[in-house]
Image 1 (cartoon, rainbow, N blue to C red):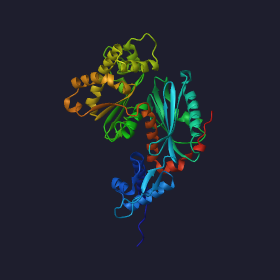
Image 2: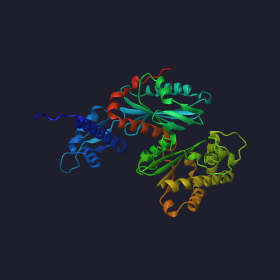
Image 3: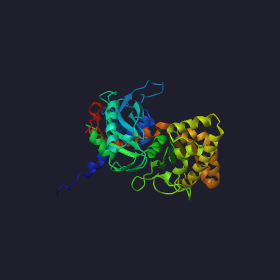
Image 4: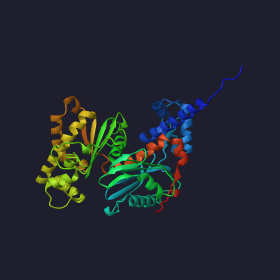
Length: 415
């Protein structure tokens, strides 16, 4: 009798299981922080032997490190504690705004190793120029970290519509970009090849707040970030909501005013036209052109009790509630997080906001929904960009280990 033929599929399945288990352990330590092997066994359902083997592999690749804690007097040998090796393994988080760029080197575990911010000339907002400047900026911050630090990827937050699969920015009205293959442009400026992941800034703000900020441990949230434009990031049942092309969450273009003004997107009466920062300054009645400093001054004046400014913020809260009412009724989130300038404006808009919600949303829905200011504030999108880069590395862990580069290799070139 001849032996049955084998296809090798069982071996492939076993290898896939191993990869998935490695990824699960690493992501757990990344999000939760130091854990004993026993805790990892409890939270993953893997056997103690499997956890020991996989942790050993992660240690060899300098993604985690282990320490044996002193006995507390209980029976048995103490379980080693597994720590994220944040100084050895990192990603680069980037936030691109109209007039600034922020770059952070973020280690496994979410700790920022280095952080830099620079203002930009708006006349250099052509995508080619931004990619060139960003590459040089990345080089400057990389030169400040140990040369042997492994870099697993670059995550980028941008204000606009992003197709994540190919890193194309389909529309960035405030940047003046349309159909820009920014991932490719940046790749051409870097001498070492590393994974680049781009996503809408509000999506990444939601991700960061859910992992590291106000919504830690909450699985149904809406993050609303307000600047000149309005962005929304939605996490549903613990997963970032993407939509068909990764474009979900464009809450700033909800129609809220039937005979309102024309939005930058070309539509009439978008939410952005009544709760953006330009609308606030106009509402206060300033004769000066809009500036970010005017927004900062308005917050100072509100804190000092200026009646005109407080009334403007009250109207702002009304329109904020009008838009949120519809979103809450559709999504049924547990938490709404206000980012951008709405975070520090929270005390001045919250009463008018809730007045609208209580009138417009069914009690069974609104009574289990809390509105809070961003805890990460102006670092939310940058932190989210790093988290997104780590998620990409987790999902492709074996390939990511093979493709990782040392900081000394990631040098920028102006091509």
